[in-house]
Image (cartoon, rainbow, N blue to C red; front, top):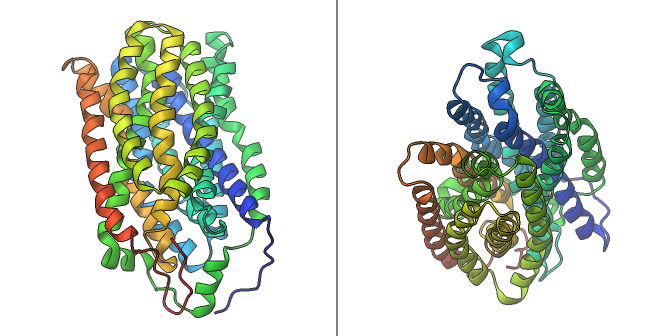
Amino acid sequence: MASTPTSHSATTPVRAAIASFVGGMLEYYDFFVYGTAAALVLNKLFFTGLSPALGTVAAFATFAVGYVVRPLGGIVFGHVADRIGRKRSLVATLLVMGVSTVLIGVLPTYSAIGAAAPMLLLALRLVQGFGLGGELGVASVFAVEHAPPGRRGFFGAFAYSGPFAGLVLSTGVFGLLSLMPAESFASWGWRIPFLFSIVVVAVALVVRLGVPEPEVFRKTDDAGAKPRVPVVEALRGHSKDVIAVALISAAPNTIFYIVTVFSLSYATTAHGVPQTTMLGVVTLAAVFLFTATPLWGGLSDRIGRKKPIIYGTIAEGILLFVFFLGLETSNTLVIFGVSVLVLGLGHAVVNGVVPAFFCELFPTHIRASAVSLGQQLGGVFGGFAPLVAASLIGANWGGWLPLAGYGVVLCALGVSATFVALRRWDRSVVAAPTVTAVQG
């Protein structure tokens, strides 16, 4: 069936980038709010009776569970994006995330309803993860497909920059609330960031509804070239590329959550750094991260995707050691400096480039399904990073060294996967049958 003609203008790529950025910011705000709360307060409110260490592990376990269903969300919402439309998929993910986050904000704690509290918390985390699974992949496809020739790296990077802005927003809100009396924060203050989602979801909906479908998708729709089940075709004909996307995504996701989520509790308990200090450090480092990401994406339009991805991944592995050494100083300026290094010179480099790189690996008619599935499979590593970190350090197997080694192994896999993917990426993007190819 032919799609309804949609008005496009010279400003459409900019509006698409903004829609990807704002939507990603607000959806990941919801997700990071939970991660921050898990590090600061949920272990005490929903896992009463456990030791502080076990309570932290349990809270991070519910954080990780949200990632288990993200590949499923990537499949479902990627299917919607390839079969029905990118925009409809992005609106749906926004609503799923918003509703589940607000419900967490009104959830009774263990002291009120007993064991039902952590069970309900777990269920809502599953819904959150399902919704978020379809966000990043489809948003990056949406931005890249709208981008003008030769600017895919720059415009696509805004989809990945949005989540970092969401981190700034969530940690900033928690930073302000942490100034409350501890009793008030533990009683009701922690709910405010979750309830604030009502406002931010409304803003994101308005922005996303105002942008049309990408022209290249409408051509695929008009040509009737859409497969019945896009993810099956993606796995049948592009399985190596899907796996490569997953492995390339694994290291950045893991190191990012170690630095921004796990370190909030680790720096406080192991090195006596105040929670407000760590929240401030993470917030300021994330500001640098979300502003640097599009710059690296734009640079890749000039120098290519290969070097930034490979060198950025290697830098992340090395700088993770520097980060933990910085934490041991308990010095605020040093911790801020090492956080900026690992996020700005490692993470931002990779994440500024991979949105365009991933989209250029797949034809239009399966692009959203393939990119979403690969990204979310890689994201599972990141979701379990705080849990793995807490378990490794809690086991006293040499402090943080095994954790840093884990990050290095993932970086090595990511570099290897990049070389594998480059062999297919060099051929340029193949479009759906009878549809004009998207130039790589």
